[in-house]
Amino acid sequence: MAEVLIVDSKEAAGALVADHIAALVAADPQFTLGVATGSTPLPVYQALAAHAAAGVDFTRMSAFALDEYVGLAEDHPESYHSVIAREVTVPLGLDPARVHVPDGTGGDVATAGERYEAAMTEHGGVGLQLLGIGTDGHIAFNEPGSSFGSLTRIKTLTEQTRVDNARFFDSLDDVPIHCVTQGLGTILRAGHLVMLAFGEGKAEAVAASVEGPLSAGMPGSAIQLHSHVTVVVDEAAASRLQHADYYRYSQANKPAWQGL
Ligand code: GLP
Figure 1 (cartoon, protein in one colour):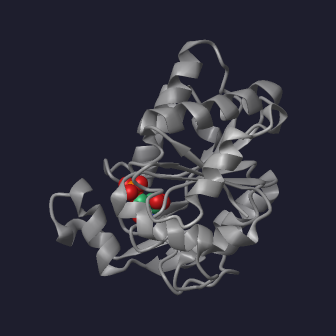
Figure 2 (tube, helix red, strand yellow):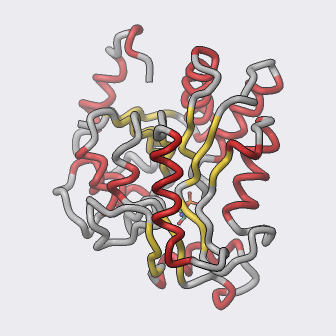
């Protein structure tokens, strides 16, 4: 089962996860981090930037992003190319040549998924994958109904996701309809999944993903198929978990050697 860690704040979650990643990078400077977009992972990136400022060298680390909009210019401020550059590559001092984001604008968008899968395989995969979760349970842009075996491909965003993400654009009409996203099968190949969620709005999706039945209707439930999953949530996002008492008990008795 997923290990669930309930923390007091986003900042505490960010520090916890970033400390772990910084230690992984110190042990293996060529570590590969799977990076997510959205507001949820920002506290992790902020805490990682503090590690960079304190001397942790991220210049040889590689990163693979989960997804990208189709048809949005890479230099559009809300393209995931731009977001990852702004939030991760620049503040951490990553080598841009080692940061990979799916191609949503190239001439041949139909092959973008295959090309990204090939790049990931050739690289040797992702060590730790950061994940957020959408209010409808999507991870990356795998909307409800996505196959647990799905690989990187073009997907159509739901209206709900477009409405949720409209806050980053001038209007709903500006939110792209299509995306290229790692599949659930792609994500499940990462060595360790770390899902973060904050706020009451995510409570239902978190409970369904961690404790609910495995269902393509709840893409987050795919994490139950992975052998090493850590879910880091604040009290509000934990509020619908049936076994919260057990998670707290387990957390209070977590062996020091275990790490994240
Ligand atoms: C987008 C991203 C997801 C992210 C989700 C939630 O749809 N593609 O990777 O998990 O938003 O966003 P937020 O973290 O802002 O709630």
